[in-house]
Image 1 (spheres, rainbow, N blue to C red):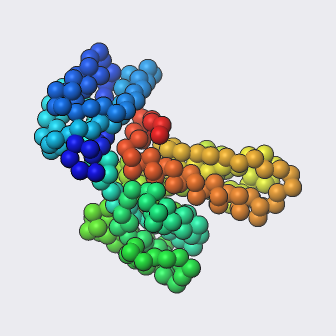
Image 2: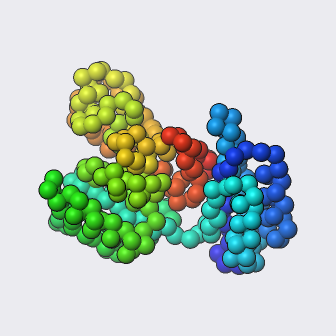
Length: 286
């Protein structure tokens, strides 16, 4: 899309007070724009207001974006305004388990995920993924040990900056990010956890689940923070199982859940539908 047919997204949060919606909608109207969709949420516990607006008929996006700064300052907003068709640059970190990587590559190639892959980074060599088509996705093998962890993370951070990466996705990347790197990536690093958090943390969650005789298994996509597997949750899903399922059955079914949960979380983030609300998130619907 180009010109007035292109769509734009305004997403913001701010302390709640009367007049926010009126001021924003009036601003959009006065610039000749047309609101296509608007969703809002007032968190009465924290008194924070959240809003996402999609609009079109924009003749000069830079002017609309720059002019909105005054309203953002007036209401003490944390806001962003983006062209909806602008592709986010996504870096995928992966280890030996590659089912999420394969799924993201497929969704990227068919255009389901509006993104460019800035890099694929793995602590395993490229040959590990010989059955995947990595064409067009720069691959970087950055091995890591306990002794070289900080050096390897410095390489990852340099790559994030040099490739102008917007979002980092841990697609079953089986390395714990340091507190320092987690802080640098606050709000723009998504992890898929092979469990329905907050239950069954740590290693072998499906074995833990089997031993407990659970009837549902799930997966959780969340933003990465310094607190392991405690970041704000973006998306979750579950699947019913029975006493007949073995740990291997749980792993197989778990892979399917992980793929779809991670893809949904990434799509929501790319489309500016997710806003952090303390230890939680507000996720506006499709």
